[in-house]
Length: 309
Image 1 (cartoon, one colour):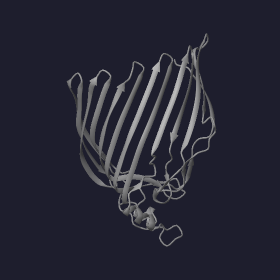
Image 2: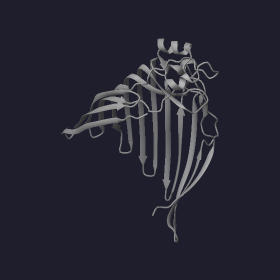
Image 3: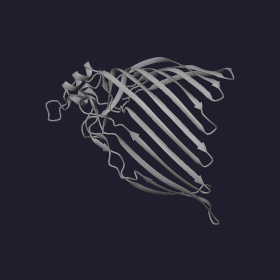
Image 4: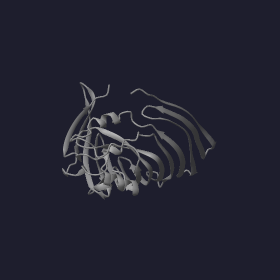
């Protein structure tokens, strides 16, 4: 398969006054791989300082995403007809380029000299949403399109730093819904395909709540830190109608700088991941395009020595 992707863009930034900056531009993209499509995509964004402590931003972008070149074609499917490896259906409409409208708005607030917080909200309206799935036990990913999708979320962040101590917290809430599979239909059983074509479903990578937090303290040449990640669980079950249990992973590390006469300055780092050795599942082998279970990492210990020349 031979093809090409071509793009040209023009962008500019205009500082209207010290408080307001506008960024604008446009792209022209064309693809001639598994599909022949093109799109003109405008972009617009602004940043405005309401005060020295408060900054707001807003933006819009039109995106064009060509499909991956790696595909399973109709000729490959035909070879398995009337065999034990025949697929549920031989329907295989060509994968299309994804087109989306993206909106974003948010602000950051400096609460003190050491403390900053921010909020960001986004929304995407997508046509021909691209997704990839691992159908069956082989680690081969196959692309397909949903006819339409709605993706939105809210992100909250805060950080604090004073002298040798720093900490941060990030929380993200998201929802991704799609409907009607219009390509790669051979991957799906008839009942699942019919259900998705008539109902809005969650995408397999949709996680309602995600979070991360961490803190570190530096004392002289020693820095100790810890962090955690949290997830409410990805989707699973028939047509992603269920969700997996939530999970948390906690990590710790320490770093010390040594001054040696022979090698000069050396940094020694010791880290432990998933210190409580909690077993948690990321995927259980069910859901749209999920063919095998996947687990988070078990407890691990790492030592690193760093020398800069």
